[in-house]
Amino acid sequence: MSTEIAQYTSRLTSGDSGPASCDMKSSCVHLVQAPIPRELFDDLKAVAAMYGKDARCIAGDMLSLAIKEMFASMPAGKFEEIETSRKAYDEKAAKKHMEDQFFNAGGS
Image 1: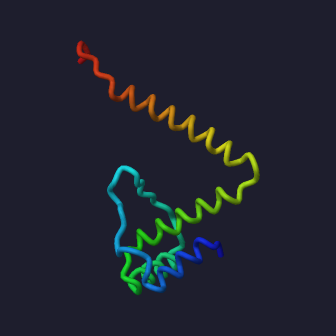
Image 2: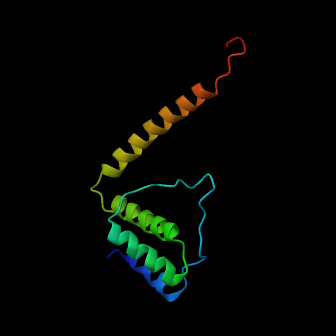
Image 3: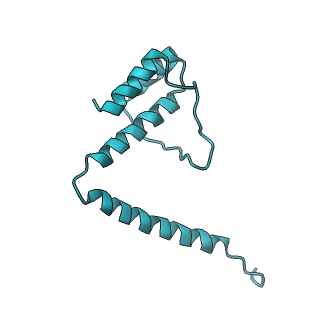
């Protein structure tokens, strides 16, 4: 088990994991729908109820830690490839956004 995940689990089980709910509305948060086995989902809901937390917040925390661990364990150069790909994606999304925002006063 990753050190950060183990630390998170320790904080959760000791009751020192912060507020019962988390930020799900601000612009710095993106909600993700991801399939997980039903049994794990049921276990997640049970843990959330047991510790008085929102299951979506626990899932988000765990997914964030797992993604960080994945990036940290990548071979040299792979993370840089991801950064390049992300930059290209961001530029394409910004261009599309600008095109969507273009106003043609004479158009119909």
